[in-house]
Length: 104
Image (cartoon, rainbow, N blue to C red; front, side, top):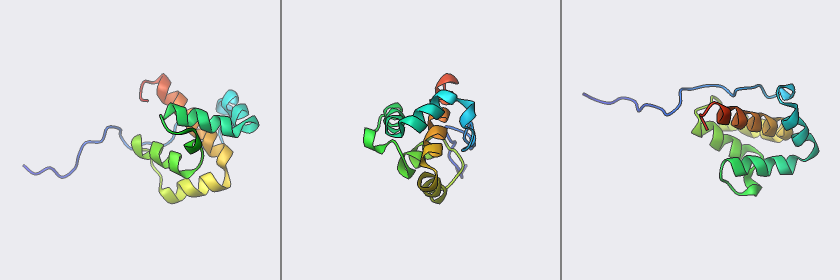
């Protein structure tokens, strides 16, 4: 018997909330708006990464790849470049939801 694919730890999925869904968690939204670098450090801490790595394309790509979230590195770059605060808030909301559901 030949193995043609490896089972994934997580089924392919989308982020739990949309990029512009800031009202889903007003605490995270305010955190990102008033202190984006602090939110980046919080994200990095959640993922056991260096605080300087918490914002932008690399951390988003690592998270997306680890949890099999649909997307591409190009999309991660564009979202991180053009809307860093929205991307950071989306990532933090997703981490928080994943923690509550036991997937993180």
